[in-house]
Length: 70
Image 1 (cartoon, one colour):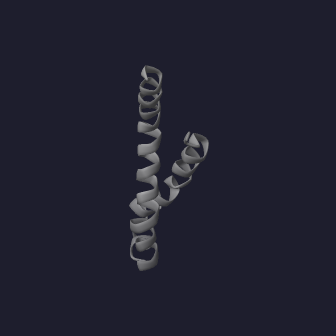
Image 2: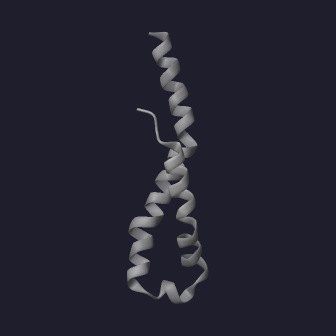
């Protein structure tokens, strides 16, 4: 199943302002709800999207080469 790279890339880019606000806005870090949202939702999604964008083409090539050898 091919990954929807455009959707994953847009999700990764859209989360950047939230991560930036977390890093640079001390008042937002003091808000427990915002802190939990970033720690448990935004950061894991950004990390997973980044890994999918980075490793996706490599895994697709590996899968294609494996399919062509059988």
